[in-house]
Image (tube, rainbow, N blue to C red; front, side, top):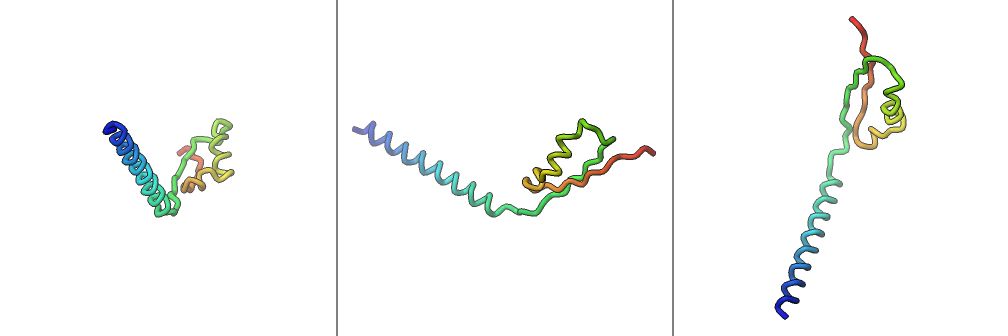
Length: 77
């Protein structure tokens, strides 16, 4: 009998902890600053090897994650 009560009590406490953590995480995600961060990227040259980066910029994947990309190509001195 005591074993069943102890098991139920542990289960209730575990569920309460999980629900509490999820509620706190949800509240924190709603109150985060939604301003975007600017990242400056300087490429050596335009190349097909950077194609995934160009696609991600044009499709707005960075903006979806709160990042704004400033893309420039480096020049020789």
